[in-house]
Length: 165
Image (cartoon, rainbow, N blue to C red):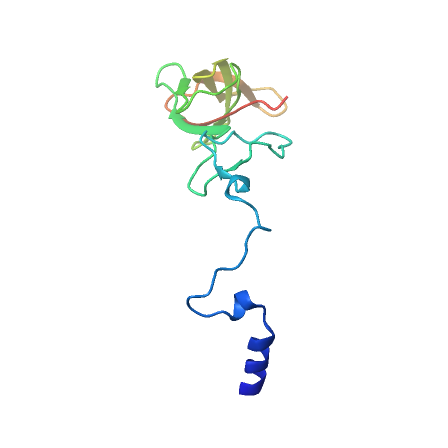
């Protein structure tokens, strides 16, 4: 075993076999400091639909974070007219983000919500609760009005996203 190690050490190039006090190996064939990318100084861009390879010549440090293109909020509709509003934590780039209100139905009748206005900084809308009316003499005896009354104090999840098209 010692003979093999000694043979390998003697057969190795001087830079690898040299001990303390020997000159360092020649690294001129490797990349220079100018060729090694530096950390990017700007905030990374948000994700895009198709992505891109990039050409900045810098890298994104592991502790950097990309801006989000999706924001969500939980709101409660007003107790009087079923309206809701949200202010985004960060303005969207687009003046008209895609906004989706999703009612959290805690009752027995369906809720429906819509968006009345949207902007880069917020959105507003209104929710309705279906009502039922019993009618005598009809086949079913029950009539459902999907826009019967405002959905008062209803929880709604609002999702906003940068448009991709």
